[in-house]
View 1: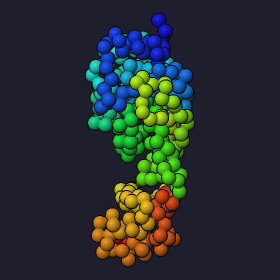
View 2: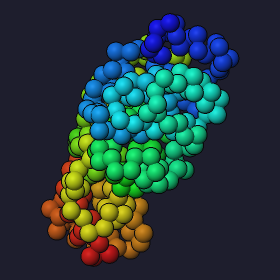
View 3: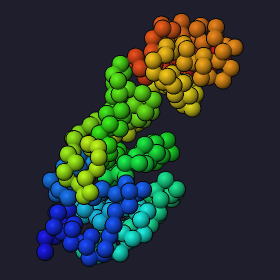
View 4: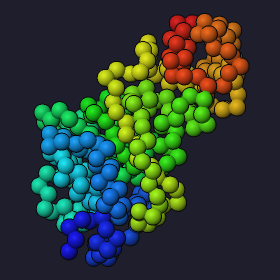
Length: 291
């Protein structure tokens, strides 16, 4: 039998053996192309010293390739029906641990301490369930989890937003949040045909490389992201209008907001999508003092 899990025939045989039916609510789309899997793993630049966290291993197609390249792989699987499947498909790899848990509710710091010990090089590599992509990535970034980076397959549209530059239609608060913490690159696009079942959307793989320090210096991160979200609340409105309407007491403090924009050298008639992250940082620091 073909050793690779991710061939159409082997995948079909495994699914039939276990009578597995896909749950739409869990966003289950399994990869059936070994070349795509190899390229994903290549982009993670793993060594024999690397530890890998995977989210949503499915039947183990990507897990298998990670196990061959890394020191240890810890995979989070929410669907109990897949546990016996994974036990069989990954039985020859003694460096894989499956945790039956919702990644979003898991204490990742504790898992890292218990499973990876002194390991210095940690990566997150996954074919993410598309319905929870953004919460998963934001958890990894905002909880300051000690990883070198993230290489994940996700919906192309979300990848475009995470990697977008200022002034483009895809640029928004998600772009700024991701790029604040990481260097974001879209490294490949992936056709629908390499999945079972085929998703309705195109996919892409992004690589997020953790920055040693955030890309800008801000007095208060929460305040920065409050300003950013307010600025994009209604994309067609000017930054002044959005800030006045969205910030607490914004209407009463319109003059203060105008003053802050002037101090930051930002035309109040500009739209949020035209502001670079450096401009948002400056504006956030000024507003923090004035508000």
